[in-house]
Length: 553
Image (tube, rainbow, N blue to C red; front, side, top):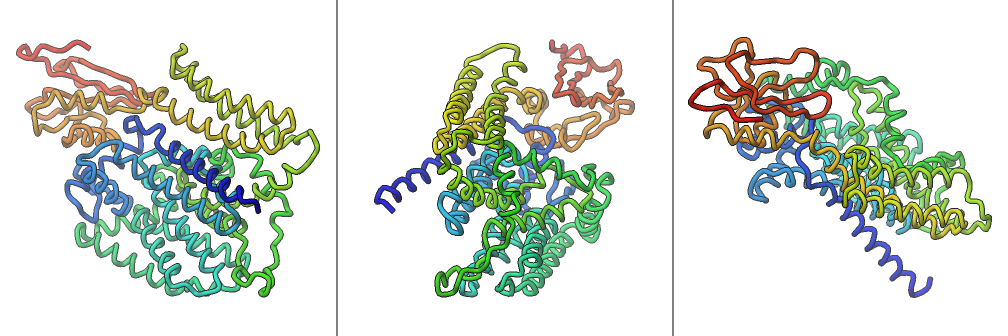
């Protein structure tokens, strides 16, 4: 190896880390978007005000998930001085960035620095990861813990010594996953490890100490149940254990409503992994699934009988996907714990393919490559085109976005046409970073007006005297969370046909556009109204009173 090679690797490593950091920061300058973000941010605000084992929303028990995520966001509020959208979103961004750094380190240690860099870049620019890690959600923090557990497991299986510190790290990740998401968190880790052990039968699988781990997990589940019972009694334990575990597993329509068919992830997983088509095609070749023989003990004693990391990631991801598919409750965000393992597999396979592909002398690059180039070009150009169509005119940000997106796409097309393989591969990654960056930068411009109810709710809060609750018609979890987060007031649900006496001066009415628009009657005058997408609008009504002349819209 030449003397320049290590410095070149460090240079590439630095630029990738800076690019990952930039992607994490882009797109954070927006409000809370419906439907999930207001709920998670407000539960965390209430947790910061009154720490407990049982999360609350609008002062009422809300025990869908354990408290650890809300504790973390509440701590972010305390550290920054007050609840804020940025502090809430920072937890997801930090979890995503930490996952990328762990994946980079894991790929570099298990295969090569190039494989680690490729894995991290592919994951960072994939659609589902990019969107979810910029969303106020529980799942990015769960993804970090499941990836940490997978890495600790691989270290145990790959090293010659039986490392107690790695095993403790695995068990800690299991417990954190439990306290973040409930039983499904550690169940995902166990399902992934079981799939790998059953298929590949590694020599040192007993280092995982599965029975000790399950015993510890059982104690942790019991501890969590006792903590919930100490504050909410048997009813709270029943709601957490049965309603939000068993019933969500077999009958989500009775709780969350996210019921999907068995094969739901067959078409959502490819979407989540966009724009990376070529790595998937290459990784699925039969040659990549042949089990490699362990290295001779004398030739490489430190890696003898070590699991092949790409195969380990693929089989673990397969076990997780199987468990997610068996549940009746399915959402695209549930794929987050699976994605780092899949992209670790794809990164290792892509590096192997890349080393051979760039040495080929044929000018024609192949149909699969051109399909990948087409996807990356669309990935780059679609956000500014959508912004132009949505807004109906060009603006300076959109023109700048067009330039930033078109340049790498054009260079990639030219290099591919000229058959410059080495440079074309590098510009494929640059185009992916450019496309992801443009998307994150333009998303607030396109969607904030229809997804952020904050300014409207804040204006309502400024109208009310201190301490007065907000009376709302047709209220749901999202609206209750918006009212609490932006005004610090309790939301009281009322029926427009039987309003409390004396009549509240201000009335907030939500319309879900289901053909039954609620109206408070002739005693009220409509003073402000706004649509938030095709399924939600808010209307502010003021009590007719001569001493308080109504304001214009």
